Image (cartoon, rainbow, N blue to C red; front, side, top):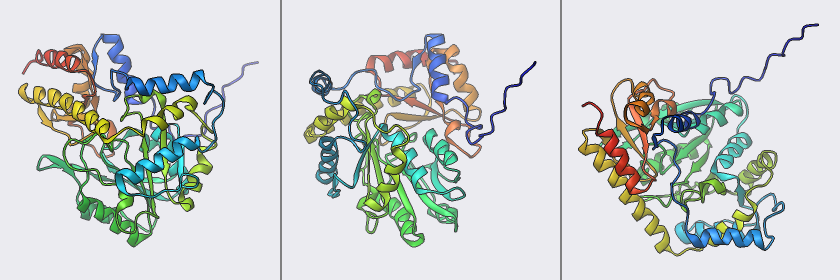
Length: 386
């Protein structure tokens, strides 16, 4: 008797397929290319942070399930960090939730704070998980486009205002912004805050790159007037401490919002990163000089790549923050990017995948690599026909 395989009926993510990061990283391995696509450092974090994780494992702390909301030491450390850096006061018992990276925090926030048919506004180009999480929630995505203007990327306030409808529930914000590297100014954030207050919207603010700023100043959305009660602030340790594989993130918000995020999070991973939570609790006590040194070293790497690209004749948009620089290669950037490993032995990410709009002229390069690796990549790119 012949049997048939039942057709899959859940189609929320049919349009997404394999992430571009997995695809391009596999291409890098197949071609022996330098991978400037995925945003992870090629050096480990500080030895004292790594040792704290080792000690947590050896002493038996974190080898079993930690509390679902995160260990108390890390929740207190996150609350102290928010107060020390930004003057934001969060109760570590009721207003701080530890997550498996910022990605889980974003997913739990969108799933917990929207209903099917609600609209979520975000800015394109956007981190790719945003679109997937909105689709999983059954919500509808509306985008406002960031465009280069005067050496940085910004948005048109009128476009943002026009994007708000009676179904809008949430604005998903990212500053410092991946992939453009822009740092939204106080006046730009004020436009978002004004709309949130006027239309009773929630803002989910992804601030993962908060300490990796070279030009400008990071201003948390929750510090703006009237926004502390309607903002979910999300960040993580992976980028700041060069331990992206540890996946330790957090969300901070008033209980009315955080309880909904936590209700979802408990059914995603429940808990994770046990011993690493202890290590990051220690890491967050680092003095300001540590954070400044991380940004200073990364700025050297940024300048190495962007100066080199400009010298090679690439139209390069120098970022204010993050791990990434954008190059304008003209129409057909995705095709150009997919051919680059064979042509030059370098992998980058086509920014087309971060847009809803039909914009296909930008390529994202990651500069969170050792200077000699970046120099080798530039040497290879220099062999491309002009």
